[in-house]
Image 1 (tube, rainbow, N blue to C red):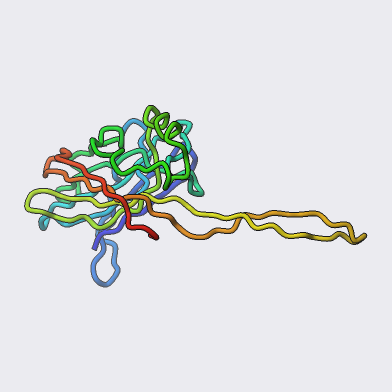
Image 2: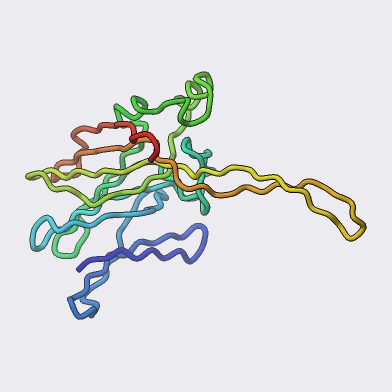
Length: 212
C-alpha cells in the first residue's frame, strides 16, 4: 500500500513523501518526492504499473511566486494548481519528474465559458494572456496499455450574500451582510494522457453537466 504525506515546515519549504505500508499498517519504506525549480507538489495519485514500478501524477504550483487569482475562483490556502506533473519510481527510487503547465494544454480554452464563470467575454479574452492557475480535484490514474490517463475536474466555490437588520442596546438599527457557502461549482473536466516516459501524448477538455 502506498500513500503520500505532505510536510510544510515553512512557507518556503514544502516536502512530499511517498510511503509504503504492509496490510498490517507497518511502514516498509519512505522516500522523498524530488521536485524542481521551486515547484510545490500540491497533490498526487499513485499507481502500481508493475511489481517494482510506481507512477505518480498530480498538480503543482510555484513556491515564492505571487500567484494570480485562479481563473475558477480561489480556495482557502492559495493552493490553486498551475499544471500537472508526472513522476516514475523504480525499486522505490525516483527516476524522473516532468512538469506540464496548463498553458501547454492544447484544448484548455475549448470548454471555458464566460457565462458560467460569471464574467464578460472581454475579461475572458484577457485571461488567455495570463499564467493559468485553477482549482482541481484529481481522480485515480487509468492505465491504458503502456499509457497513463489522468482525469481532473476544475471547480470554484459558490457563495451568496444574505442581509439582515441588527439592533444595538439603544434600539438603533443597521444592516449587516454575510457570505454563505453554497457548495462547489464544477466547470469542466481535464483529461491528459502520458506515455511510460512521462511525455504528454494528448489532452482534452469537456464541460461539466449543468447543475454539477
